[in-house]
Length: 156
Ligand SMILES: [Zn+2]
Ligand SMILES: [Zn+2]
Figure 1 (cartoon, protein in one colour):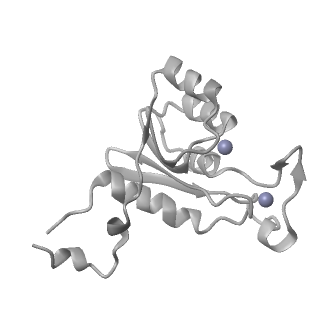
Figure 2 (cartoon, rainbow, N blue to C red):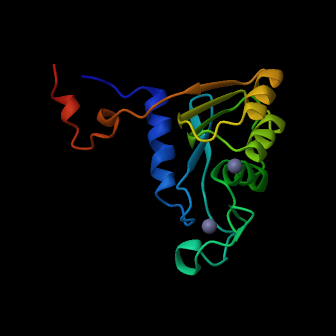
Figure 3 (cartoon, rainbow, N blue to C red):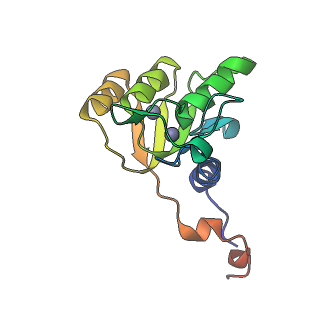
């Protein structure tokens, strides 16, 4: 029996969250993990109770949708809302974070960022991560990890 790895499990969770995105520009999911436990998750979407981009169209200014709170930020703010510490935590995110999210990730004490897809990886974000001693590592979700038919249990 092949057991799904922790990395694949948490990245799969982020990909599932991405499917909840309400902004049409990019479907992103983020999962915050501490001691191999999921403490928060987020996806690209509007503020709670707000209209959704998928219904009203994006609110684009200077090439960015200003209605959307990024997945990473939503996950961090969920921790703030419920008083969950993010120091020394790990983040699994479907796309390499934007510069604003990178700064928030650093300030929240997250130590490791696992991302599935390169996305406009900003050199300044990479530099900030390096200076803060944050490890950014690519973890691609393998298709077999989401084999929900559980066929892998039959493999010898
Ligand atoms: Zn939008
Ligand atoms: Zn962002």
